[in-house]
Length: 377
Image (cartoon, rainbow, N blue to C red; front, side, top):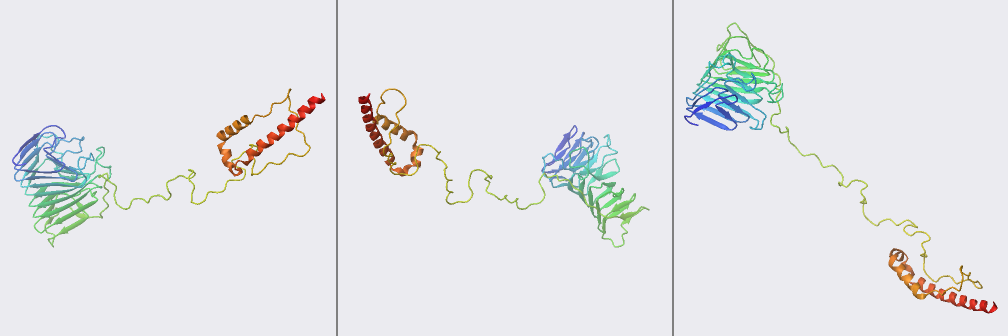
């Protein structure tokens, strides 16, 4: 945006809220209920070319996010996780003195993200003693408490800063000064997990209270560009910065898990393992005993000589068996007992023809005996 005039009102309504890449030049504006700029996630905002942005720095989350510029990751899915970047060149950013948080709001607040802040030739006006605060939060859903701090790199070029730097135990700060100056304290509570200070020969650090660092690099060999004012600038051991997994994506990569062994067919499914000839049926299976279907084949045994058939029970002369009924019975048996016929197919039909011949012989004998008995009586 170029030479725009911006106005916002209400909580959570900064002049610029970046979930992409926003650049303003020669732009003015006032946010009466929020910050001047908010950058979320892996996104950027730039204020350039004599822009003049004002705000009241009113927080949207109780007293947590009161500030002039905030860089953070909200975990809402609006912006990908990564490094938030803010750049200000030859412009003015201020928290208005009429604001209720003028005396307590830091100029910069960084939480639950990595961040880079580039300042060159800017005028920064605020009423608190805190220039920059990198810290975790509780009750915001911005990452997990205790591991949702801010890890920020502040690059100063031709920039003069008056104020203090606050870093908590889950945050880190790196300050690079090029032809710049800082007057204030750095990590006075000795809580920062990592605090690195790098000065070139043209830069100065003036202490207004005890300060602590984990790494200090000074291009001026005699360190005369550090003004202690009877305060100490002391080194201590760096600690690990605990960070939230704010991307929602598991860390690491690699090969997916190996497919479990086995065919996927559950045991006992009825699908036999292996291949080949099925086993022989056990003896006596499939054909019930006494089924009336004789095993084997051939001619039935002859009747014993001299034997007389037993007279059937009942009165009167028995009717000779009907051949048509026998044939019908045979046909019915053939139709309804196909399984039994298949099991005894080795007889080739001989068994049925011999039965019919024997029936005729029995009929003749029985009829002759009936005549003889009638003559006697």
